[in-house]
Length: 258
Image (cartoon, rainbow, N blue to C red):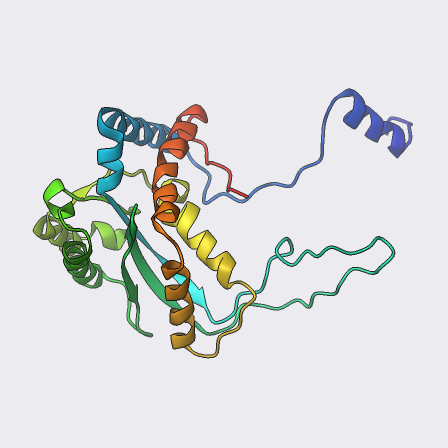
């Protein structure tokens, strides 16, 4: 249309205008202005809470979420990269899909480590009653593994899923005595399990093949048992950094960590 070559156009765009061609990044949803504002307000409220007693607040947080765990999840293109000489052909990688074998895992943890892992049986739906029973088990796990934590007061951070907000789940929360840490909807980038724990766990399991659910469960348990307190403490502490970034971005989603 402009009567110049592609090379000239590229040179103008790249060298003179400083532009580069990038791919769109996936985000959970298109946030509305009120949703962005709610994310900012929740982040500011959390940061204000931490300003008063950062270590105390972080030590009280218990967070949890659900995730699918597969018998086989292929390596990503980046994970399968290898060093090769320029003269050799790159290795081939066959296109494989995730295996049909999978199950749901619910994991609760804090800055010291794993508190509870619940594996959902096949055919069992996650309902308010189901989640309420997990909360009661979680209280017992905290009592057993974290002496004094219940006395200080548990700050529960979980996503605003419908089952988490059901009447029976809210009644269970009142019964176990947990305080809810205010969390804005549609914000997995501000949930430690989603931005830290699960991605690292799945990266470790990626490319490994399991034939039974028990083998996968053993691998998941082995991954967590191999980590010391600093690993879990880092994931919880990142919540401050990400909340600050959410405020700076005016509520926009935070990029995934490399």
